[in-house]
Image (cartoon, rainbow, N blue to C red):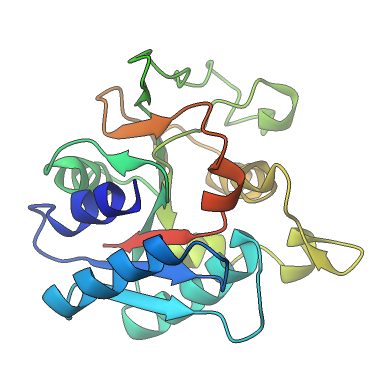
Length: 219
């Protein structure tokens, strides 16, 4: 699944992007080997990182990668892809890029679940929800694939992504989606994409392990 995930990202036909895959020093050596082999084949496209502090959850890695991406290339868009999942087809990034040309700051949806082939539950926000900043009181619908400007993510205070000084490791997406959606506060900046651009691996017993691999695509 790691190989499928990385190959789907690397072979996108959008011309300007990089893939960052982070190995958090887990025992999943097969995924690490695949990533290293693909990095050898695509040294300018794929960046593989290895933790020097032991296993960590995705949030601190996302924080660090967002800082690095914005430093290297201001205006970078981050596309989140889980290690067990993959982008759907070679045109996914190009489709997402069109929304940013139309003024998006944050995009989400749509996905299919594998192996059931069931549709995801992403839908547009109801009228007024974004403008009135009511997203926390509504069902969580800003799901795969979620994308956003790195600089928007970095407007969140680091302390707000932690509990008792520790990075959040449960329901982490909600912790940073909600403040970004509230900062956007407009359907002109938050775009729902109805096209299926993402395949989500459901009910995988190894998913908890795989989620500790942070894969980000920088556009």
